[in-house]
Length: 231
Image (cartoon, rainbow, N blue to C red; front, side, top):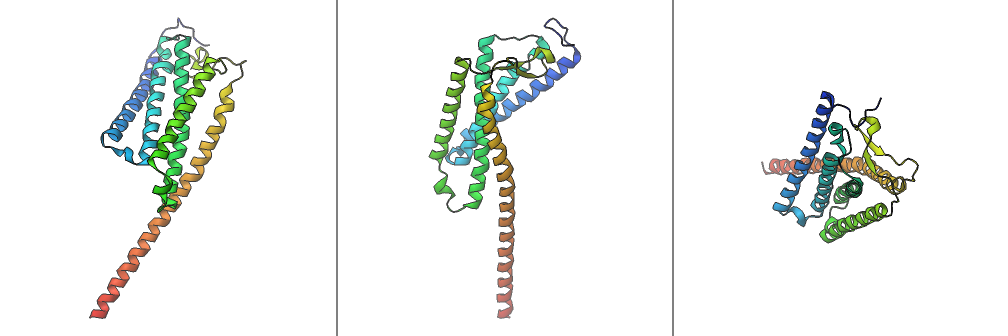
């Protein structure tokens, strides 16, 4: 039977809450440390690190939303924020999720391009192009999410009382969920990119490694032959 908002908090609730909050805080601190390293050591003159920076920022937003919105009801046994707060958290979380999807794909394609088109990589993938790509993604998805929530055109994710607040999902079952239509294609494309590009990148790395070994062996053989001819 699902517990209502007056249910007592048990030891399991406290342990689960503590474990989840610890993971969320670690995610926030770890990504903040990565952001500081990228900014402090001036790595952002390379396109790949710009993608990594935006992915880390999105992960910080995810961590903040989960620790402040999704997990506290486990021990509070009630929603601790109002509808406006839930709406703002959803805007932030869906925007961060879009950035995560797009930039994970972009990082995989960036590494694959660098390996396959080694000589032309710096011409095709520039810092300005990647920076504009990231700005466009943040602007487009943030604007889209703000518009959808302002028009009440989507369902909001919130902790579910029916599951003792241990999970979260949609409550507005009867309402059409625009995110199924908007985000599912992006998620499918991301899965396809990761599935195809990562194995291809590993194969290309292996082939390059084998070529380097072959060239070294050929060079060693030539040196040995020259030494034999001298003696």
